[in-house]
Length: 91
Image (cartoon, rainbow, N blue to C red; front, top):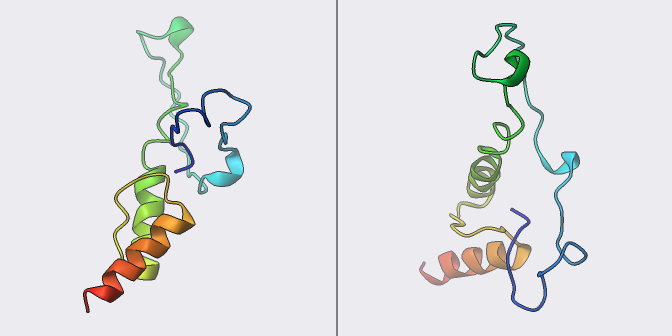
């Protein structure tokens, strides 16, 4: 939800807003101690799995709270407000 490429503004890590652990919801984890035959020393990759549902979950929370569907990330305050105003204008 925080990344958006803007030519001339977000072309390096100095200007890029990097998400931190505080930006993601709590994750319930279950430890399954079965080695993966494809992984090194039986290891399993799991770093990316929790990131996949984060944006959809937050966008759904925005829809639940406001009644508007935001379809573009990052879900900036200006985009959310524009979606709310657009919905109100259609009434």
